[in-house]
Length: 239
Image (cartoon, rainbow, N blue to C red):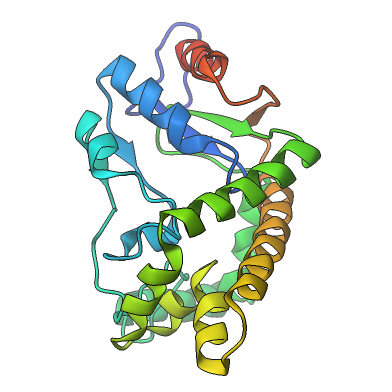
């Protein structure tokens, strides 16, 4: 990869703004405001937004929001299909052979090279903004989000999905697993929703821990609002 110098501009394509952080931190709102202001497009990195019909529980951007700016990697597959971003599929012969070659040449397992996360290099001119509303606000936002999902018809959405075969990955989605289990076991829906809140909060903590490892992330603790979008645009201009 070419390294830019003061006399030569960065040749990589971009700029690209990545918004990262825990669920319920307000990434969707910022993405919409920034993309609309720049005439840019949104590429979703949420694993469950690829599933059609799983809308409420994934907090999928509404059709009117997606009409504001182009969205990618949303509503790609049926919930009955397995869909994963994991390193190598068994049928991927080329990458399997490559992994064996790496082991033969270096004496190290292919997975050991994941340590590159500690010194990541992007193929794009990348600015990464991390959104962290703080522990207490995040806990409250998670509870509010689950309550809003229930009000919007999450239970009914899960009941409709339960009428068809679901893939293992779709079944494990936050909110869906708990309600599916409750329906199959005859447990109260209220208890399932409480479990959704607990699991979502735990997931948010793990997300924060993961993203904190990435030295590229510039963190903001600003509460949701227009100031966040302004900060994102400022950082993008400096990137």
